[in-house]
Image 1 (tube, rainbow over the protein chains, first blue to last red):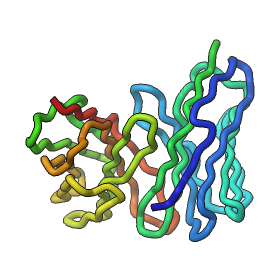
Image 2: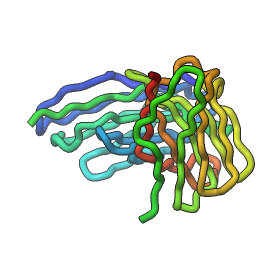
Image 3: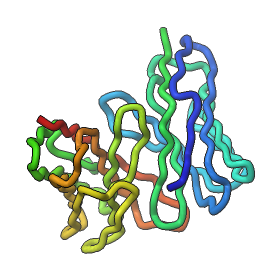
Image 4: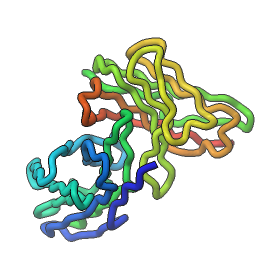
Length: 111
Length: 115
């Protein structure tokens, strides 16, 4: 079983603050890294799928970077808004058709 | 609207009872997955299926069983052998694997509670 770790576990920020959190994973046999956002009472939704070292993806105020050699990905949120409050999950895709999820970072944005 | 439906939203199980959680998708996806979430933990894979009539165990398959008789449906049975079934269960689906993992689409989940 792969060890995918996310930090911090939870985060409280003020509206307008920019924030970032980390996903760490074993760097051997890397295929892809997924980021999902999971709002309370809703289904998880895909944000990004990243495959190449140095990849940077952006969706509105949210962006992510990937370093496959050292085994980490950062998710950044610029100018956090209350609607960004959610749990952010990263997941590593390995050979064998399985995603291994991290424990998630729970973000709470205070108005 | 295309999507994944799970039923019921809440399910209560008595000791020694088998219960079945439903998952249906109309996205025409070949692959389907079952995950379990416990408080403070990430999603853990129970079973997955890439094609009809075929499925594979995930990390925590003990005490669970599945079937995949139709492309649209992937029911999960929680058997009496699962000693700690209280959890939130999520079903997901995706298009066929290209080699680096397609985005997974999730259902709304079923919360299973033991009486």
